[in-house]
Image 1: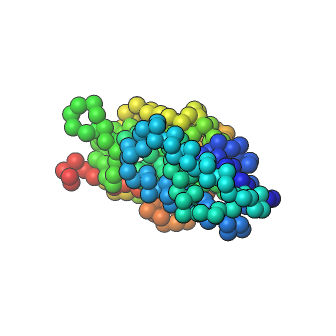
Image 2: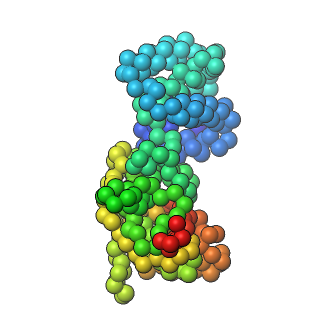
Length: 282
């Protein structure tokens, strides 16, 4: 395929293209160094700008940046089907800033706006972290308030989850489970408490907004490691199949610490390893 236009690359980064076209661009950048460099320049600039929250809130400022970027684009001759930059030091930062103004979702954000510490892995070739994020919270103090889990939880405290599944995501179903060092599996979504049942993934809406699931879920966890895994899929999966994969993967890799994700094709997975403590350990 020919090199995509710069405008199309920005649409790709903003997740405004169909999944099939986005996949074509991802594949193209695997062997096109100029296009890959443009994406790296834009991502590098937006990541630096993004570290200053609230810096670009003024609509008037955004309008000036977009207008300036557009004027540079109009004066740049095209080459191989994409803009050829006469002044890359000026054009790329301006367009990168403009991309950020329209909320370019390059990093996962939790419900509190903090960076999510879940690690994204996918069976699909496109990094699923561009579409999905998952955050886990535990109670803070005595009031009904919660704080994101960092590296440890207490064995007897409930957990609450939030999820984001961007509108361009192909995923419509979700599972969240916890795997302990002992090999025990605890289900958060779907609910699974009765042996012999085989519930399936719960549906998850596609939205640019973070969805706070709100429900407190408490399991009798044992002290040690707990791997929380979120599995996002196009079709519903069933609990018994996943539990067989957990047992198989634990046997092959020798411990929950060594399991990032489960061997499932065509899904997006998010994984977080946390420590479970007795209340007296804190």
